[in-house]
Length: 375
Ligand code: N2P
Image 1 (tube, rainbow, N blue to C red):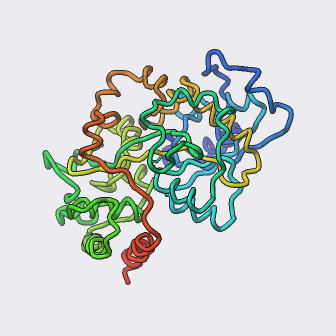
Image 2: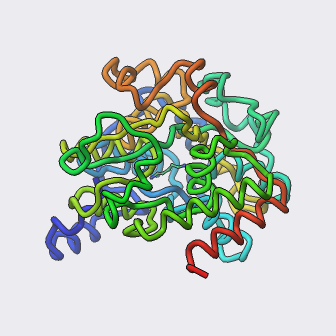
């Protein structure tokens, strides 16, 4: 896991930095067994660099001995991949709106894709250039946020829950309300984005995570305000360092990142909250006017290669919508109670975010600003 720089000496970090290309390492292992070399060499001599905006720790890039999929893509295609990361859908959206980014590929979640489509921020994909789209399990296609899959191709999905320190939390069973338990004052971390934070409060109050009712949004904001004195910090991927260092007891977060943490730290656990979790479907998209659309489609196609989709899922801990990669997933992972669920469970115990109306979104955003600023 990449984030634990505190355990590595500065000299080691410096020498590691020298060996990095793009966002991957220099490993030269073969991942895709029989790549279509004619297809992948189409743009070989064009000196293309793709700008890829991804969530942190969301691709297998050679860390911890896992395969370096980006290096293989670069070798196969002659295309360089330049990675940047974002922490929340809202941050990604703001960067794009500010015109500060020239991304070729982005990975927003469902509700943000819907918002970006409605604001004409995405290119339609040429699926003839993405033959591997057929590897996607049809149940993840044609979702409400992109009904014809014209703009997005599923990358990973997962659920929210609570990462907890088994040495500090002794309740046998708990729900979202443990994040309001005064016993854990100052040992609670909280999502640092409005949609995930409101979803927790909305579920506790028995509302839909997609409510647009101003009174319900206000009640959720009141609950989040009530929680604030107990919260040590509002964070996103900083939970990796804080939870692994034993600095906090509880943190709502995403299943895959929890799996990555639990792989290295036995004292951490993850609980999916039965009263209602969010299920997200993060998908690959090309922003409007992206400089290298054809190369971006080739990159999307590469990420859909079964071996690549499996390697990514194995490293990042998130659930794959790629049916051929899913066949490679071990029974242990399939049955860990965190990564995969029956369709019935997902339907009855989880909700997928929808894009809110502009009014509801503005209200949530204003309320969130007040909560965070304490005004
Ligand atoms: C990766 C978090 C991505 C999942 N660290 C949330 N959509």
